[in-house]
Amino acid sequence: MAWARAFGAKIVLLYVLPEHLPGELSQIGVVFHERRAAKAAEKQLPELVRRYLPTDLTVETRVSMGPPDYTICKVARETDAGLIIMGSHGHSGFKRLLLGSTAERVVGQSTTPVMVVR
Image (cartoon, rainbow, N blue to C red; front, side):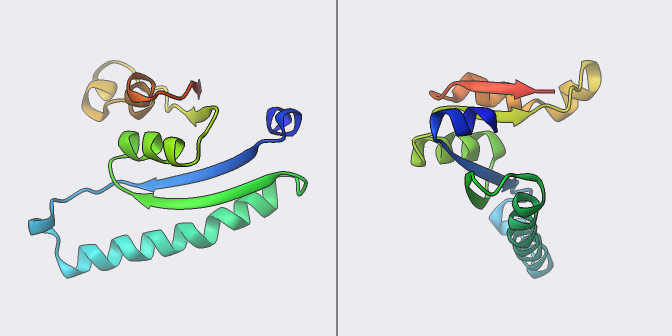
């Protein structure tokens, strides 16, 4: 937050809902579940901003659906972001092999500098 203030930057708080099923496998229940999740996120993000971020910061909230790594990089390009700051779950070993690392993929794909916070 101090960086945003110092540089007069806008914060884009992004929540990405991953797409789990290919189109032909999507059933009406899955589509409705995804829409409910997106609506819930759209309501919760402004509440998080109100609750945890100072009012003097400019904050935009976004909810997007797609592959998280691709979507994060895409939104960074669209918003002309100067820095991507994202969390890492800190998985290692077998768990990381199974789950992959969104943060690692973003670092590898992004043309925008990336700061990963554990």
